[in-house]
Length: 329
Image (tube, rainbow, N blue to C red; front, side):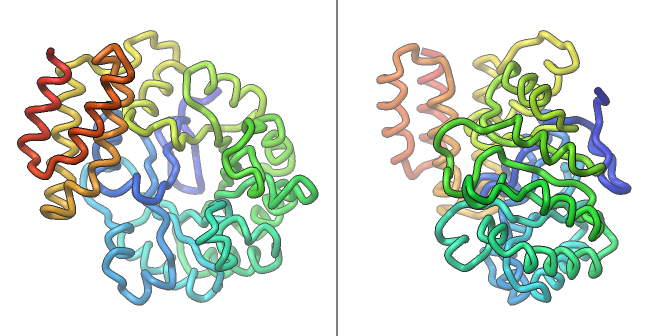
């Protein structure tokens, strides 16, 4: 299998991609993950209509900057013209790829007939794709689920229509919307999408380890895979799995000193981006995951107690000191 992925005129220098995740893949996180070797880290989900109106928090989600191998902006919405305008803005901002969200299962998204709710109205989904593809010169991709529920698994059909419209790649999470994140992702079902199209297909869902990565690619036949929740507290995971797929048997995670430096740098990047105190507030969820994922202290109960204590601190310097003490004790 190739060690890179071609999407339109863009070459992604790897096969392990990081999904767009609201509240997670902000610019500080994307820079950290990219510095660690991730070849593709998408923005948070960006509401196209609110982006066009210039809502500050939405504009911030679409922020681009130096230090990224690729700029991938994901848009969500249900109005074709608003999505087209959002795509034009993304292209002007420097997007290399523009991704459309047809997969988010969250009620606040599907309740406005966006995200995975668009799989229930494929004709509207196609009008959105047509509007966006026609509005920009950059490659357009789509992220979807297997379908709304088990009675209507229409991912393969929608992917075929997407390819005919001019979409350059599709990512498929191996669950229906009704499943949310219950059960196990069905990687074999993603293979039905791969069989239906000639554009690249990316498999997503439940990839946490190198063996998961191998199994997901083998069972789906996909061209690449996309990580989601597995990167919580592990922004090095994409690079580590990429290396493993290429036969590198190096360490699975940074050592104590490197991990401590990474976390403190991430916190400072968040403070620089958002300012204080918002930067610390936005970083706390990452801090909690970093503590949970570390093997120190050995007792999970001690890690949970440390997480509760450090995530209540309001002084970044105190956070750094306490984390250093926790991991070097």
